[in-house]
Length: 343
Image (cartoon, rainbow, N blue to C red):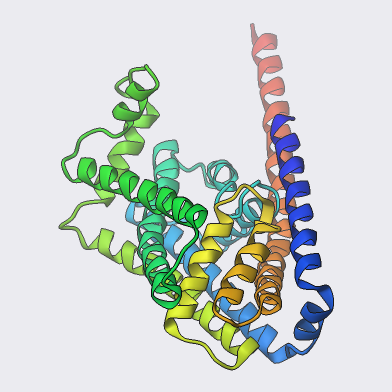
């Protein structure tokens, strides 16, 4: 109930912020740019969005395969679609939120071992964070080069996000390469001790096995994660070009930085935050605030279409899991009755 209340509050804040920036910039100008955007260009952005999503699915499957878990592609596709819908539409932030469902659904559908299942999600997030950090740094440097000035609040937010992510990843890789327990450090931070032989220990072992400097598996995973973020950069570049018929690598990198800066706020689908961030970025680069809001409209529209497909799979998987739980429940009752009769 608390999670739903928090989600509802964050959604209302996002909607209020969205209408505020739209009213400030002017809906008429945004509508004019949006209506002039061709259907062919919309399909190209949708295709790139689907391609980005499929590379993300490839990354997850690659990690599972490296652990010896070779599950059917179509089964993983359904779970990935559904978890993406949970993340983008049903969680307070567009960056994560569906991982719990992904772990649970994979366990129910394929009886995936808990240690490998949980480790796969953590490994995937670490790969993504490592590559995201590179593009975030490039984005900030691009913005500074183009603008050569940055507001104090934006500087603080950028330092906190990039600095915090850098410290977390540096600590992880330092501990991982030395085979020193990371979870023990986390447990001790909360005043607890990690017990031997637990699922947590198994998860950590799987993570250490993947992140070995001399193993090509880690570097292949990094390459797939890099490809996904490179495609996100390409999508930004192409969409800016479609809207203004001009762009540059530096502008696209800076816009991509503001994209993830907005997504880091606890607002569903980046509602309000994405529109405000892009209005600021596009206005700074003299591309027009209304163009920035249109940019966020089109990106969000493509992501929502993918997420709506995920809702279909979410309902389908939910029915399968629910009916499976009922079936197991009645099987246990029948088994207990038979055992009682035999006695």
